[in-house]
Length: 100
Image: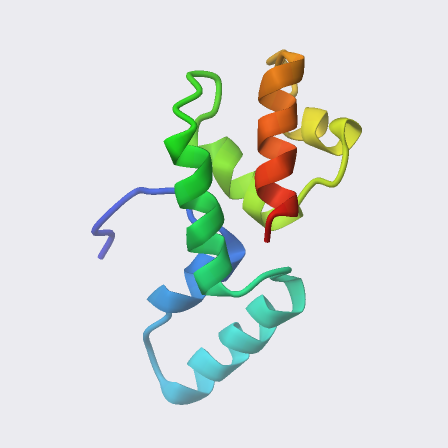
C-alpha cells in the first residue's frame, strides 16, 4: 500500500525496503551499487537544499541532486533542464554538494 508519494533519493530508498529477508538483501545490494552517499549524508544534503528555500528547486530536483552529486555547472544544468538558475543559485547548490 502506498502511504506517501514523496520523491526519494536512491540512498534514502534503502530505509523503506520491507519484505522477505532474501529480497531485502538483493534490493539493498542493488541500491549500494548506485548510491554515491549514505542515508545520513543524503538526508543532510536534502535538509541543506530545502533550507535554501529557492522557489525553482522542487523535491524532484533535490532527489536528482542527491543521486547525481553534480560537480560543475554543466552537470547541474542537466538536472534543471527548462529552468534557468542564476549564478548565485548555482553556486549555492554546488557548494552544498561539495560540503559533503
